[in-house]
Image (cartoon, rainbow, N blue to C red; front, side):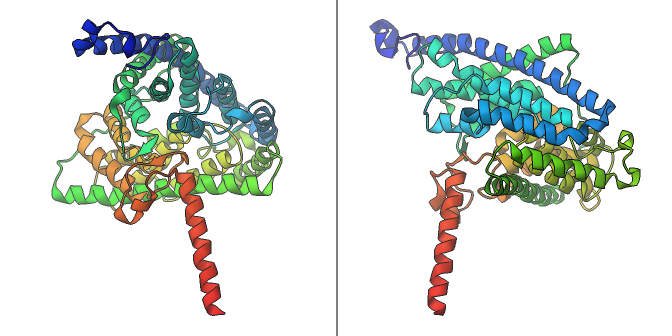
Length: 467
């Protein structure tokens, strides 16, 4: 038993050590106490964040002229992180780094900074999500209890995993998926059970806190419906795999697009606060171009590719979407986040996946709502390498009847997205194919460096042979 309040397993009486279940009881009591604090605070924080996000979205829709202030909003966000948040700018990747390669306690300021910056991004009209904010909030809050309860490195790892689970669970209303996400996200292809009770307990408490506190704020989670689920036949199984391939490749495209824009802005603009300013100008111009038929009559602008895009996600379950909808959301979100605006990637991935699935119903003979639901979690699975969490999320959101279809789509998407992810600090614990077996044990960012070095080596060798 790891240390707690300065005491360890070695300090227990001999008669306690001899009975296997006694240490387990102490373990459960310990993490139930910690989980109540972490889950409760994270859940309340998520409720306040969702309320702020709802207010920002409503205000923007009523005052669409604010999109022309995107460069101003971008500078404020960039300056906040440049002058106040240099030590928390890595966001979700910082949480993963602290789990696998612990360095120091995550500053609590990560929580308010990312919350304010994300609300500001949506307020001004940027395209981003919300899970990143809640996850960072949960991780930052959780890590503060490391010192309070005098936890060692082993327990600190479990604590951060629980915080991630709490954030994810509370922001989407999916406690089981949130718990599994916390266990699954930091190592690709591996799930370690030492944090299973703390992760589930904290996720459930956080979801309860958000539901209870959010009820008083008028905040509810979006409900989705898949009315028709056909029988799983060999033909339908094949169609699920085909759709899963499309979802996986799209998840890979989104991940690469996010890293591309982020790398481009960093390489071209040295002064960090200027990056979202330039990005904001381009986004504002893009909104005007997309709505060229309205001229400068911004009150009639269609902002379906900006903000969270929840109405479009809901519509995708009933109406076949256009082929370009998922591509446009991929472009606007990856550019927004790459430029330095803040927010999560997961809700945009829901948008991308559901609209892609809805469009594929033109060619794949499965119900439109079912394909939209499969894409909803399938693209998410491909972009985050978390097929089990995504499968469970599909079951929690859409119901058990669609479970087999959801599972096949998520697993196939995971396999076909390659060693890519929106989280570059994920470690490859199990390669997706034998050809990439040598990449095990490295983070995805390290793998990119290795691949680039190998590529240059081959190019130099070919040049030498030509001479």
